[in-house]
Amino acid sequence: MANQQIPYSMTNHDEEKGLHRTPTGVTMSPELFEKLYLTPKVHHAGDFNKQFANPTPLGFIGFVISASTFSMIIMGWGGTAGLSPVAGIFFFVGPVTMILALIFEWILGNFFSMMVMGLFAVFWLSFGLLEVPNLALGIPFATPDDPMGTASREYNAAIGIYLVVWGFAFFTFFLFTTRLNLVLATIFSLTAIATWILAGAYFKSSWGDYEGAGKLQKAGGAIIFAVSMLGWYMCSVIMAGEMRIRFNFPVGDLSHFWPSTIESREHSD
Image (cartoon, rainbow, N blue to C red; front, side, top):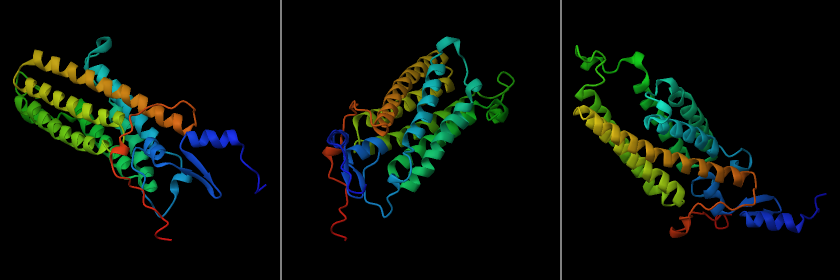
């Protein structure tokens, strides 16, 4: 049994997918690893990637469900006019799946995908607080005409500044996605742009220009919807790779523009 040969067709198929069989198991090419885990392949003392399932698509599916729902609602699709009915996307769908993925990305030693999961998890959690009416966050700015304070200049300007900072955070991550692939880089660049546009919507609201704020809100929602569609595609790419589907989904590999990060073990043995 130990000397049983692997059929040529299976070997050839695996090599096409970036997998190479060795006497002790299966190795994964750096290109396939970066495609499945969204992080450069580097040497780790433990080889947990062969022991645990890939957690990256779990976090991605939580992100795209949240982002697509959020974008369609702020664009007003179907007559929607508020996010409070779907507050679960801010506290459970997105954050729970991404925090679980974050834990296992950390165990696997996948630095960048761990950071991505953590970044989006805390974003959804913090932004979700704004959609819980019972917290009454605008009360300090309340007036007789605005008893909740959410229409005040101070309240909306503060949220606008908050989103500006988040836009810079997403843009910073975009710079590092240029090490991976074009789809992921586009996701982060558009997310940064959309966040700045939504910040502009809050600034418009703080100045009383609600018509302009509505237009910016819809524009930001449209961009986030495009981001969610790219996210669905990226999630499908990862799942297809894990399920060994033969079709090669293109992602626009950018890793060949950068020096290799693979650490050879031959020099240390």
